Image (cartoon, rainbow, N blue to C red; front, side):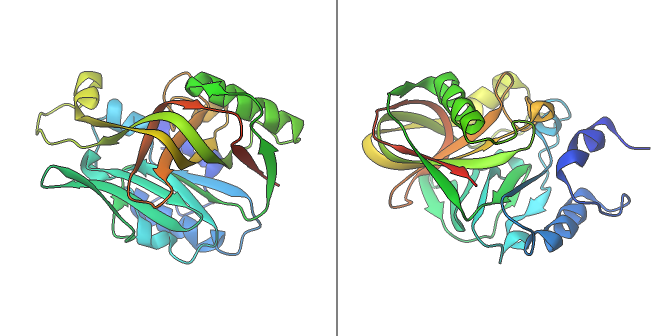
Amino acid sequence: MLTLLTLLTMPLLCAAPPNLPETERAAADTMDTKSEAQPWVRHVGSRHAIMQQNDLSAQIALDSLAGIDHLYALGPIEGLRGEVTIYDGTPSIARFDDGAPNVSTAMDAQAIFLVYGAASEWTEVPVSESISGLDELEAFVQSEAETAGLDLETPFPFRIEGAIDTATYHVIWRTDDRAMHNHAAHQEAKRMFAFSDAPVRLIGFWLHAEGEGVYTHPGLRTHVHVMNADNTASGHLDDLTLPAGATLYLPK
């Protein structure tokens, strides 16, 4: 019998044998994407498994995505021990080493859940007014996507490049072994950081209504990560102040 989680994931996943474990099903899914017309978006796993089922196990190996052109991806590493950000094929795997944050470009991690996709052709949209907070960022992406004729019930990647005033972000890093991982434990596991007055890259995904709260935080249709220009720091975006002058890229 199909579970509710399986029903929720079916719209974004290619057909695969239903008796496969999730990790093998994800690997089967990626076999067809390398030749698929861009843009496209897929996912494996969900926030529900983490927050409601206490399942922190790996659902997809990043190296199964190797060879996909113009790959974009984001999600948490298995065990909630780091963050995955991939920007146009360049990995930014944020972890901690002896208490200090570090970024690796090796595709050697496995993710609890991952939203990923590809796009090679983009429409450039200037950010003509400052943006403050995730709600304003999402509203801006929605408005410009509608203007560009994108279907808001079809997931798509987007990106922003430019100098930022401030950006607060976290890297999830769970170190306790408590039996349940609830909301309080999740907040405690976040290691907070910030960029200021610096060029950054934002990679995000717009998800359809069924993805809200499943692959995004509740109340949001977007999931966004941030990385600095030299890829020495990255993580999950929590807040930002983006001045006019940056560029939003929407897939064609």
